[in-house]
Length: 128
Image (cartoon, rainbow, N blue to C red; front, side, top):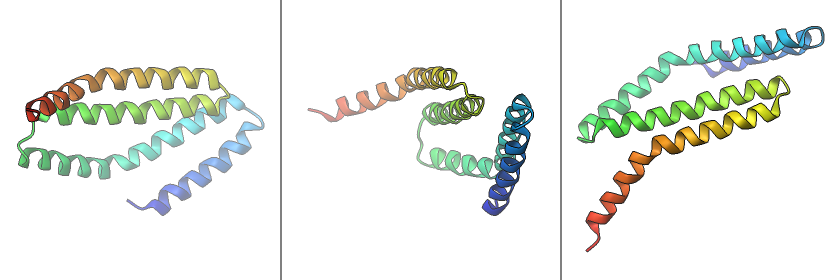
């Protein structure tokens, strides 16, 4: 992964979006979404490597994979929520961005319940 390529692509996309926004605001939002998706797709391969390492560590530590899976889903929800909110902000829809962020927070809270229960059960077993 070369951060220079990502930043360079981001700068080029930003200049293009700023120019297009003057004439067609709707097209600028679509270009912004496309650029974000392209950066994400570029990062998928390195992300897969990190996930494989974390999965291996989870197996070596003999941890329940369901909790690791839940944690990855929470991180995914956070990234997707942030991307969606930023797209809405780019389209000058701040109110919708806030609603997306609220939805993401609630989804994360719901996904985190099993992890919180596991932590509380562990703490309770350690207490006399």
